[in-house]
Image: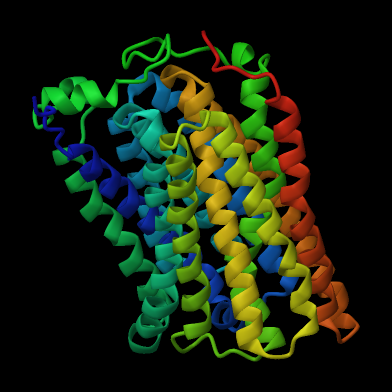
Length: 428
């Protein structure tokens, strides 16, 4: 007797999440690529840039909080729509700014809107995928962070050369409205999606835990903060998010200052690095999903993949010993790929150990914590680099930051291992 056919509409949803995340990262990455141009136009110091990045990151934290609980209440479809409308408008508003304060203001609004991306995407993944496929699905949509960062170093310099920096913000910001139309047409939760077959619906819900119903009432944050399942994600984001933000916003400037890379031209070096992160995101998701399919316990598979990622990050301390830009590209590309493998699995852990009705709230809390830690770290980076600029040795400042980045993941993994040693999925 043949097995029932399972259709693949869930992967259409995954594609939508991927493209939204790609747009999200194009809109945030653009300022790092335009940094030399904007520094010349507005006379920014490294600290000024650090304040602008910190303003974005702080409001991104607020956006995580606001959208985390909001999406659990109103659903991923409407919540995601509101998020992308806010951040796309904010991205386009950069085109009319004429002061440093104005950049801080519109970056803050951008951060507020972009804070809804991951709470909505992780919740939608939990709604549309069984646990054995969630890490792979998360890895695919999370690779949009890498693809967006790959597209930006090619697209932005071309727009800059032809139209100037204002049109670069305007054009990239408008892309979000194209995605919004597709989202409203094709997305709905499985129980309301008419394009979904019964076989695929049953497959999606084949490993539900108690309390995983789509229409369950959200859980109060006071309850979530009292359980260690939430702190697995919160602690991980607090320690490792600052590393990703550093590489996202300061890496172009690092190559420009240390290796004299011309950011007014398409940068193959940056494309290579962010391209490697795409492999890490999908590969990390694939690895833990493959281990589960081989019979491993879900949490053991996730933690093993996280440990491998933490080990692979360590070579970042070796960058200081090379003067060859392509060796630096290879090492940093490997490290950032490891971060994306880490990120794919840490997001998936939430949906493994927390019921669907609380997923966005926990992602929101963890994202808020990670973003606030990142904001403080960006301020630290700006002050540290300004100090070493005055000493005429900015490379030494970057070396200190690389050591901190190398240690963050190992410390985080030890905390996760401690918290999860006797952990079971949370039953609310």
